[in-house]
Image 1 (spheres, rainbow, N blue to C red):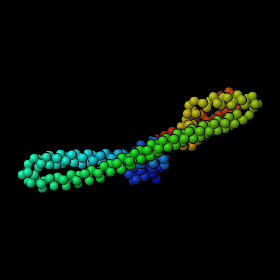
Image 2 (cartoon, helix red, strand yellow):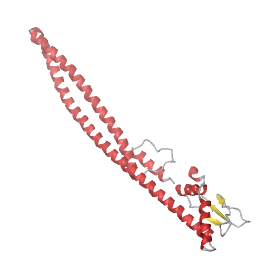
Image 3 (tube, one colour):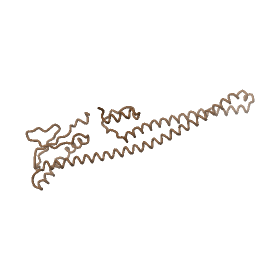
Image 4 (cartoon, rainbow, N blue to C red):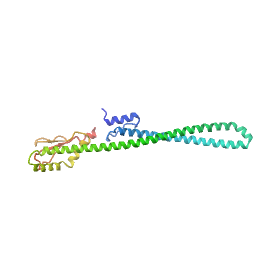
Length: 246
């Protein structure tokens, strides 16, 4: 069954927004706004090519027109200075007149097409700028929400760990135990916890492990701090290989 990232990129390929699905699956799947931005970028590139082609056509027609007008001017000058030449060149003059007239019409049409292509390109670029800005804002908002969610998950885990490990004794002893739990969980354990939640795998679980029991796979036994009111705890993490193997 295709992953969402596969499906999104395949949709882009089928719509002509990209040439083919990108093989790099380490990046986050693009959202609707980002898909629009990718499409707008592809359209902008196509529009730029169309505008350049339209300008090239204008330049080509203008160059031919200048040549024919120069020929016509030279021929008419010769005809004014030589009656015999004038009679012989009348047909050529008419042909040049007709060609110049046609080229002027073609040039006008080409200029209108070029101006239209330019206008469409400007509009597309403005749309692309807006879409990129919106995609950037959406990504930043998603990152903030993910960060808040991860922090909330970690805070909830720590509070539950305090309650589980420090389940007996006086209030003063509870306070010392809570401080000890915080000290033990910080650092590498917190980083491993956040790695699991960042990849949207199962939230790590705190479990009581008897002395004669083995620590579960991907688990790490917590050191038995003297301040703990209960001992023998381990944190069971997600499979660290899954993000790369999917």
